[in-house]
Image 1: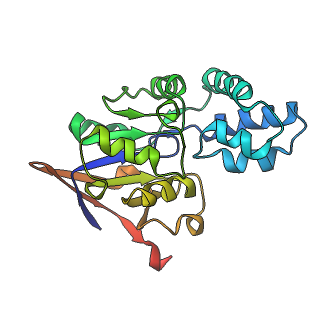
Image 2: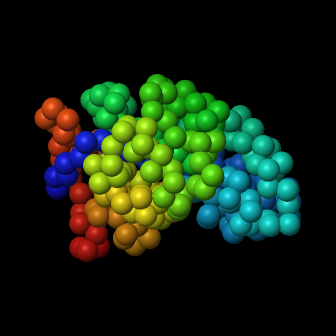
Length: 221
């Protein structure tokens, strides 16, 4: 499949970096410490700001205070946080002004995880600290497009979660899903499903990026 865009917006965890083991460890520890069902807590934690996860699963708690604790736990847990195949090569092939990372992590956590994975902090980075409403709100991806001075229609998004896909679509962007975190049937809202960024090739034609990849159209899944 081939797509054209003026810029690419990448989610971080589950797209560029494998942090799933750390995410699950932290949220299970936090849930058990507060006598909550870990399975109920972990499921919505992927792809969302931790602040919104806490509000959803424990509305009786002080979300801002708990968020600080969870953030520090996540920063300290780096075991198994590694770069995913093809991510480093793909980022290196793109001009700095034609891509951004749009993540639900806070800026300190994003910088830490990029460092653990050996990826540089990009010039354009949208984090949980930069928005009032996280994914699935369109705000994060609209901020990403604005940083690059582009319209949403000019941006192509790589995502791995239903919340992230909903955010990008609500912002008016096309989405390619990666099945690193959720099963394919939960990612149906994306335009296509790819197995890995290692299968993605890009060509630059002035201000246009031509993206070619082995992907499955979602209507065939």
